[in-house]
Image 1 (cartoon, helix red, strand yellow):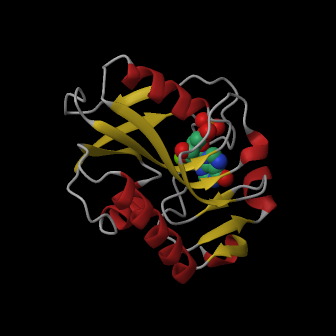
Image 2 (cartoon, helix red, strand yellow):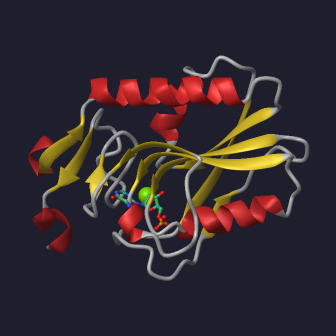
Length: 180
Ligand code: IMP
Ligand code: MG
């Protein structure tokens, strides 16, 4: 698995610092609110598990599983399939969407609009990584861990064709892995 990685972008230690900072910000901003973390599966599972433990205010959690890519590396269509919906009624909750990476923005734009229709008290976005130069819709993250250039990254929950999610760091895949 390691031999497929061209370069490490964020080490375990760096990721820990990033998540700690986000947790502090969120804990500060959501004092007295009714916070629900909504993890967008599967990519955000590692980030979610670490982030929730850095949050010091009470919160609920739920999971939504969406799929848009198959094994391709780009969401060209904006078509998002809800594989698993939320269990909890989001009315009266302050939702924070927890995502691994904001790329074109189409996935989160779709999910955000879907949840807005269910009348939560508020809805914001927290993404570990942001690829701003790739944005195809007008969407921004309220909380962002780090920006990455337009390269395909894996690890810490992020996959290529369902692999590499268990790498503890974020790295760039060698191009020959996904062009072959
Ligand atoms: P968007 O709809 O284009 O913003 O795509 C968001 C989703 O695409 C993320 O939740 C990831 O699952 C996937 N994705 C986008 N860029 C990458 C990447 O560099 N590595 C792994 N997955 C990615
Ligand atoms: Mg993915």
